[in-house]
Length: 506
Image 1 (cartoon, rainbow, N blue to C red):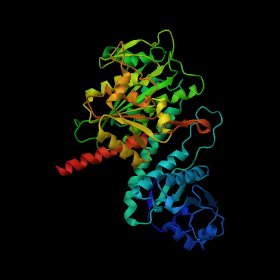
Image 2: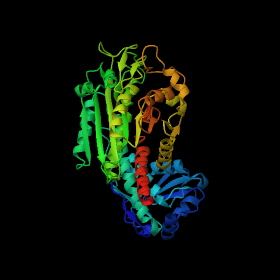
Image 3: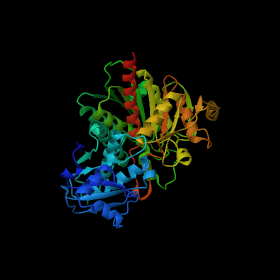
Image 4: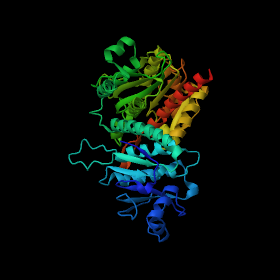
């Protein structure tokens, strides 16, 4: 996908479709006003006569507009001017590009950077445009015999009214394009069925990513024999009931000038299918447990975005991959297992398996002496009860890290909400027979799951993102969302900026 920038009069844009956002009050934005002047007040008349209702997300296609070089003109409703915030802006973008993706056009020009969004500059708006394009053209139909025609859209020109905003728009488009690619990667991995996307498949995808990176990404895959020698018995215990072998996948990107600079580490939960094990889940909606590897998928997506952007940081991405199945070898409720850290865990519920693979991955992360560690997991249904499907749950042992992630989520509009990680909750994990239990009962389930992980994250600043409510959508539009790739990528970009500021201050 290409996102060139044009600062010339929009009326001169030679394009298959010119896209113009409009508020309900009829007061035209700069690009729309210029187009209105040369088109015999076409836009103004459509609004005044009621032929176009500029309610949020409404779209009108005008097949011919006099005075314009464009083949078509599309009007997109922004709704009420005083209600135009980030969510409304993105809704208008999605409406526009969903319509455009259905047209037989390869290139369009859009004037969305004109839209006033409080506290959001041109680069942010350009980035949101690029991300919306990728969302609109994404398709997952590789298992269908009859495929719908693929979107032809391949070039979106960003029309800029202010000359001084051109470079910011280019940068925003570049970042949004990279994040859009990463989100698409995450969605595809999440949408793949469990009989295709196995732990071994994820390992193969990592190796392919490394081979295609031009040396920017090194990949190591630890098989079950290596994990056994290492002592990662907690991770291995989860996959013991499956014929699919477990894997620990480690991807390293070195972008900092100093190769020894402390890396930032992402750890993804990669349960490629979760039956619950011996603590078997109900049959209803169990097909959605293919999405239980969306934490791992978001790590792959973030690595994809990082390879496209090439920030000057060091990054380690770790994926703990296993399939949770019941058979005669499977871990049973009441079994006690030994973790890589040396702590013993009483498994009271085999459906609380994500924390059992993550705890060994967190311990493995110690060897990199990281600047920060963030794990991402579809960990608890309790997160959905607490936060619904809008906010990702965030818990951390470091307030500065938590604030950095919250800020990144606001910038990316991929938001999280900070939950407490108080010592009082740790008591719920007490076990009569082991160092700790793997569940803490129904109260505060999201928090006690994070408490469990915190026992294995005492050597570094650590945060946990529970994406059980945000990683996928159920119902008619069932599918992976690609979250929180935007948040994670922004967090890493902010670390690059922080480091450059520190160097300048020195």
